[in-house]
Length: 212
Image 1 (cartoon, one colour):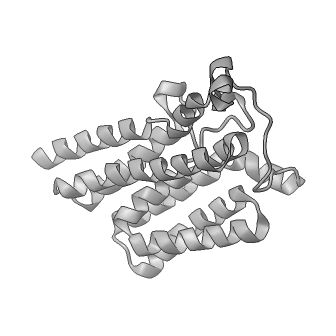
Image 2 (cartoon, rainbow, N blue to C red):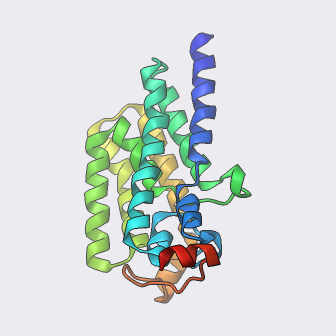
């Protein structure tokens, strides 16, 4: 009974950690509502296009961090692999379907990376390398994200991972594909934005004065 209670608590904590909107908060500090810019996504890619490298790097650090913390907590409490997998799924769901932002959010790639770095660090590194390589070659962040995430279950199978982590891998991949459907359509139409393209954004007057 105690294990079930602990698991339930860590799942709720995981979801709440996921709702910390890193990209939204970083953009707000720069006087920008990131949900009204570019794709409207609060993830690092949209932050990069709207605000530049430094704000995007902050988001790239914070989003995996919340995934890692949410997944490490049940393991530290001795809940076990299934509890850790459910907490990992919860933190990504919190990131993607954020109750604080009207169930809008990010696409969960960076948060998923944080989750898998705790559960299967070697697999996570392989996915990162594959995804980054695809981005560098194609200059499409969305394509690299999808390639890395779609390889996740395959690497987990090859690794002989725990069934809980394998099921989590399939779930995270499915979430990534669903969140990238619009990107897939743009890729097929040849209208997807490439890495390095910038957006013109309007900042709040106060933020504009601070930037001078």
